[in-house]
Length: 306
Image 1 (cartoon, rainbow, N blue to C red):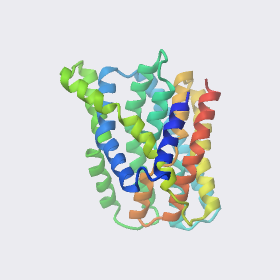
Image 2 (cartoon, rainbow, N blue to C red):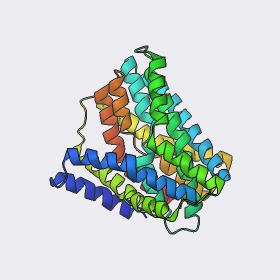
Image 3 (tube, rainbow, N blue to C red):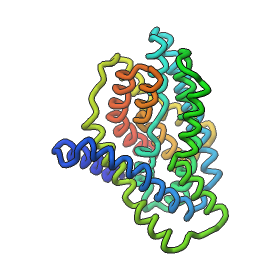
Image 4 (cartoon, one colour):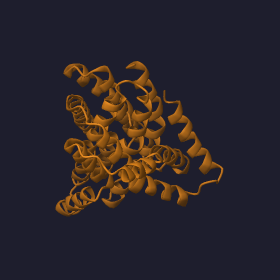
């Protein structure tokens, strides 16, 4: 089920390893995917299928509940370990903020391809990602302000500007508006966006593989990086499973929720931590380790919940 995901990620790793693609080229590929491929994919997929709001509600309960639990537990661990403030908030940040768009979305799409519920699940996931990503960004900025550095209002304003200009968010809202209004795009526009969207998922996975090769372990506190990465890829899904059982989440929705919770730490965390004077080596180590841990975690989730 995950063979295409693994093979395309391995291809990205190999292309960079062999020098076929440079780090500059990988950056351009990621930018193309983020600004063109993924938005086109989202508009087409969401506008063609109305999401099941019953599925969506259950997904959001599990995703938000598990995220809140991980933040609380990671905060306790950081306090118990007496981490310095800048390291503590970085530790918590890396433990909860997942890479849903570039990792979670491709894995879910491929995992549910050619299944009867594929269209409904995919539409629900595409819409569910938006409020979660917004929450991730807001929580991340708020968390990084805990040690009292910088202007909180200015930081939140930057996040707000980023959200209103975010192509993923804007494309999802446009697709959802078209779906709810029952409006069909002109054939030429629909086919153009569909063609552009076809490149999004493979390029995203190639970017992940290339990023894994290009990344280097930061000279941070290695034991804490391991703990945060383990919390991100294992504790989150475990808590999500408990919440899912409690709310009676269906089998398909449970697989989706746990897969998204098993996503590695978001690469965007590195930029935010660097800008807000966090522990940069620690977050770099967490991101790298969580990417290596996420793949077996996702395979385990999909196998155990099948």
